[in-house]
Amino acid sequence: MAEPGLRVLGGRYELGALLATGGQGQVWRARDTVLSRAVAVKVLRSEFTGDPTFLARFRAEAQHAALVAHRHIAALYDYGELDDAVTGERLAFLVMELVEGESLAELLVRQPRLGVPRTLAVLRQAADALAAAHAAGLVHRDVKPGNVLVAPDGTVKITDFGIAVSASSVPLTKTGQVVGTAHYLSPEQAAGSRAGVASDVYALGLIGYECLAGRRAFDGESSVQIALSQLRDAPDPLPEDVPEQVRALIEHAMVKDPGQRLPDGAAFRDAIDDVLAGRRLPAPPVPDTSPLPLEGHSSGARRRTRVLAPLAALLVGAGVGIAALQLAGDAAVPPAAAASEAPGTVLLAAADHLGRPVAEVEADLGRLGLRVQRTADPVAAGTAGTVARISPTGAVPRGALITLAVAVGEPEPAPGDGAVVTDVGAGSPAPGSSLPSPSPAPAPVSSPEPLPVPPSGGSGTAPGGPAGNAGTPAVGNGQGAGTPTGPGNNNGNGKGNGGRGNG
Image 1 (cartoon, rainbow, N blue to C red):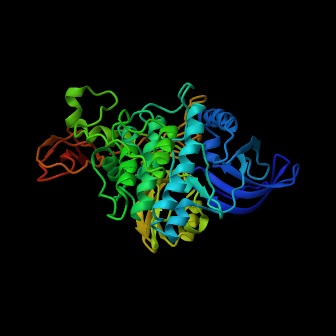
Image 2: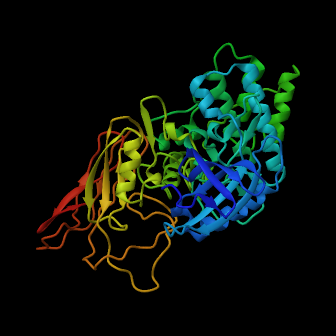
């Protein structure tokens, strides 16, 4: 996202230094010229502000979040929308309490293990904040270290309810769309279900685990792998120096079944008080090895679809090669460490770059220490000159070569047929954009990339597509069969008369 052309938003908020950047937008230090106080202003990415559904949801959540006043929640002061006279873009912004200090994510980079007393202090304040939000009907849905702010005196404040959804409101997010960050995603969200207050508890339990162990509970090469681990795996035991009752606390918060988990923020806070007072917690429930029920699947098919169904849900709206599971991107992180997973690595989220002008993406990647090369993609949907695919994604080393597939363009749609696209995937235009309108060209035949399939043994055959048309000089659809010898997709390749095809 480019720096806003307006230095004073709404005739009132004077932007200063850039504090953080992320998938949803940028956070600026600003000054409220009316009340003469320092504030934080979050300017949303223009590709989201062009989407009426996104704006409607964001306005509603701003209204709800503004009603929750709590000492451990960063206050929301104002919300506004305006047109940038310089860029012509529609801007939406949130004005929030400026919390001096650092995020828990930054603190854990400097000090990976916080120790038991400090961890319980952080968890207790965060749980108290969630208790207030849950009592008001709000579900945060993106509780993670980056959204937990720690002041120099140890005071904790939770911020960024930007992708929260009121538990009592009509859902505006599409069914099955995954919102959140994979490392802190609850099993029920990974299974495609709607997040509830117990989902926030699970995420806070993962934060507690990370503070005590000095590492994340679940990690992997991709967000899909991490989310699948959330669904089916147990984390490694906490270090031996963690007291038994603290272990039990974290285990209660991280139960896979939300019905057996600590039910809400208030229950988590009270359990922490019991531990601090020396009262014993009940034994954590015995883990249920049966898979969680999945949206749209009967119990008889659960075991077979345990891996494949969540994987399909994770890919909805994010496209093949996702690196962060989110509707609008990760919450803000410090610009100096934007998308960093560890020193020397960069976490690339495809959704952050798809549909954006290639020159803009090249500049962003260059600032992260990455090398970039372009390739033309004549079959990708999207406005000419925008990024249709990015490879590789996930955690990549600094200095790595990133390939950007650039859309060539599409035929002009019929008047009135422009469609707003809200799900970002590989080869899709950015949210809020209309289908492009370059000069008409023959519609190409595209061959979708195969979806990644989690490891599973066995072998099989898969028929290809129908035979290609005889004598057709262009690439067509062929027929064939493939026999894999291990995990992976069953893809067949074949040839039609006059052209090559994929089955």
